[in-house]
Structures are given as C-alpha cells and as structure tokens.
Amino acid sequence: MTDTDRYTPEEWETRLAEIDLEIVRQAVICKVKLFDPGVVERVLANDTQVCGAQHPVAFETLRALLVMHYAEGQHLAQALSPEQAGAIAHEVRDALRRRVGNQLGGAAR
Image (tube, rainbow, N blue to C red; front, side, top):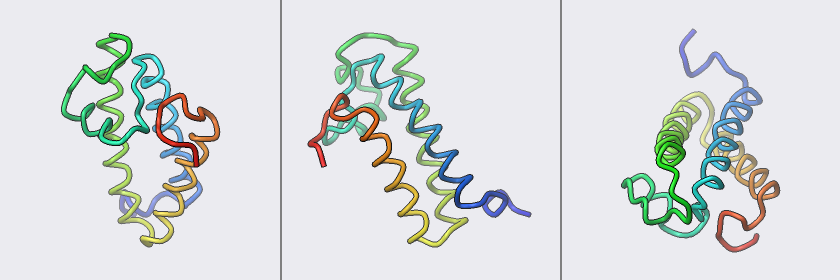
C-alpha cells in the first residue's frame, strides 16, 4: 500500500480540514486577511507586513501549514481523481468560510 492510497476520500477530507482549520487559527492570531487576493503568496514569501498583529511564532506556523496544505493537496491529487480531489478541496474551503465568514478577508460567496 502506498501513501497515496491508504486513505479513503473521507479521511483525506478530514486531514485537509484539520490542516485548514489550524491555518485559520494562526491567520486569526496574526490578523492576516488570508482570503484576500495575493495574501497567501505574500505569507509564503515570508512577508510579515500582511499581519495586523505581530506574532512571529504564529506567522511561521501559518507559513509552514500553508506549505503542508499544498503537500497534502499533491498527495490528494495522486490518490483520487481530479474531480474527487477538487470536490474535497472545495468542500473544505466552503466549510471554513462558513465557520469564519469574512474574518479573513475576501468577498462573501
């Protein structure tokens, strides 16, 4: 059994949701408007100017979690069909948006 096929779609969704929820927590601590255009890229570029509150440890954690999210997304894409992977990612994002609303920026959907 490989890393990519040891999880069911539901388990992948749970794993991704847990990572994303922690991303939200760290973004709230740092007051980063993560849903605004270009902000994720700025966090990945280590630009702390996107923070409304300076919390270096939370910012580093946020940055690492964004990388982890990407890595998990790559594993997910290998394990499932592109349609399944897209549906799971969409559901996780929608669930997070319902939980935090516009607290992290971006237009309401």
